[in-house]
Length: 225
Length: 288
Image (cartoon, rainbow over all chains, first blue to last red; front, side, top):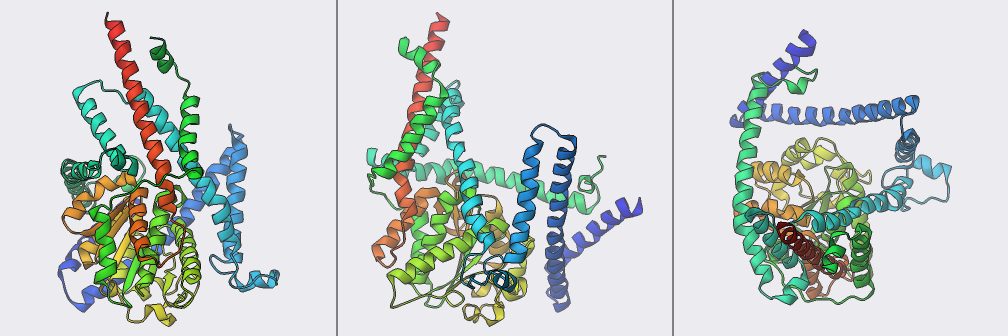
């Protein structure tokens, strides 16, 4: 109980308060402490990748073992994961490693690495394609659901129409002043609403941070209640 | 009534087909509508053009992946090319593992095109431009860079010691960076604005997707960001501005895509109008 609950709460409280105090203390020792904390944060962040890999492998191995629907795709995920990692580790990220050049003597230091090759010619087209499909769904959704059902919806519809048209050169071709109208919409009504949202979000972040430091908010420890 | 019924029962595959044609045809038969440069784009351009002395440093944050590269990749290339044209040093940095590949591709492209169009003033990797190695930690990395950039990364993305690179001469932390332009379609822009600009006073510009641009107008008004490139149009406007200098022969990816975006936007508006006409006629008929 102490290791799983009390210790993390104590660590959060002590380091939370210490880092707030540090901000107001312009002493070299305070600066060193701050730098050390940043180094620790970076190191801890690196370990999150191990957890991500472990979680991905566990999820897909379970799917394969249980032969759930589409389990064959899990094999592709795992093979891609390990092959890509191996290419990066042994072949290099942006420059071929000496090991890679020894295995393949024709490879020069200026050559594209196998990892970059998979990125440029596999991941880039695949990810771009998937994202571009969004335009097709949006077109269909706009046609079927974007209706002037109420005053609010009509206002949204007109504004969206003006901004959509004003953000492309064709809109400017139709009416020269349209980009200025769009700029006004974004600069005033939009900004007022965005600022209100932002202030609300930031106040929420401050409140949550204080609750974490004081040990009131404990969801980040996991394990339900 | 026949037309209204046709609209109401329209198979969505027809919409997909027409949209695909709206995007493909302008690439084959470009029109090239003239474009007005918006103030947020011009202010980033003007700052790089007039306010940074020769040898100054522009930091470009490549915090995007292939899903948003259509809008953000042309920005990375055109801003880097503009900085090189003014003999500035360009550092790419990324907080996303996938951003490293994007930055690497942008650097390759810009160096190749620059050296092709300016053989008398060639630019070199490690001397004029480079990519800082990817380090995990997001906000911790941004804060640590404010203290010491070399200590944060140790190496560039190509495995060279930063302390030995010519490009890093005189660069310790944000005080030595003249401008940072953050390119992202996510909230990582806020990380830079809050920690690098808010805490260390780093001068910043933003390059973001069209859908996210509306979020950052409050930072323009508060002058936390000097300017913003919003979506493909922002990139195209910047390409247009740099094009006037006639120093860089690289492909104008954003300008090429503007016609396709224009026709797609018009098609969206036609769809919405048709959908609403059909809705109101149907409603009126049902009311009777």
